[in-house]
Image (cartoon, rainbow, N blue to C red; front, side, top):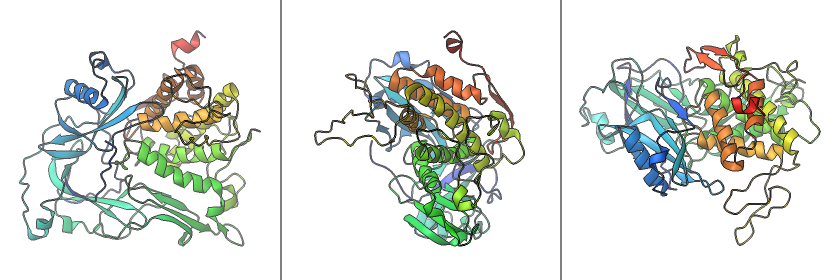
Length: 488
């Protein structure tokens, strides 16, 4: 269950066109399915408590939940602190994988605590011949194959091929592989510039480590995140915004932001699936987590507002629309802000998510205090973890709980990444953080968390009408709290 799959593979996919698509997108395939959902209070768990083996629980749940063929992915794992096992199931049709057909199950003590589901439930595809039909396809005959589901279109089978360049991951989808000379999709190359300039059939071995003082561009940074087990690449550029030029490597916030892409991308949807944070709210939160952790790590006990990239950009307010602040007159971002012009891109969406998390975290600090270090003590030789001033005294059989507000909030955000589904929405990520608190502390911060989210429009009555996979739709702020919190 701990081993990870990592391979560039030729796959078969459902697509709406027989030729290559003309729209750039990430490896986060296709629009989010109309049936996709994240459930934090499953109704089927009561029938599963007899079994305490997580994989048996997962199989029992899935057999009652779906009639579709599937397999349990090898990157499923158990969190050693919380005891939650994260199981990832991939849908299959006619023996082939559905590339964006995912169910993630979060299991502890023989119960499914929550799950995300994007299994395809549309019309069956047209039949096809799996044998090579031309000479250039012969070498692919023994490779793994995969299907991808999109709503609409004529459900023709096409090739979906993943390739690497030094900077990015690409996938191209077409009925004739050699015809895809103008098509490429970018997968998790998180930066300000994504569009490929060459043909999709452009193969290079992925580079790794950090490219400091990269001379191939200016005023930017990016991080390429392949599946776990493969080397990512962080590129830091020179900024020509001052004289002499400034090196982005010397701005801690930029470095932390980029490295956080590797964290959030591999925790969301499982280590072997790096295509869950491609665009829309999902891609925006990928950017927002980077800003939030960069701001949290740089913060001190004495509160102050924080810009992003201010030194590198030579701008006092940094490179975002607003500095991060608990003062709504300084940073007025709410969920509804996503409707404004200029907030369709992932970086702008991410600003809103980071601001929301920053506001929530300050409530946690007000309740639990502030720690000068975000790093827990190292385990002793016997494997035990010293409590010190970082963790609360541990209760037998319970997970270790960070003692202070900033360390606890950081843990909840990271744990939420593990719980949430592939391609999460703001609401999914919010619910995952709140459930992470339930699993870690027994829910003692339930109302503080809800109050923080609701103060920026992500309360129980927040809504999205006519949402699109690129972040469109009409966003409505919601400031209401759960009934439990109103009575306290």
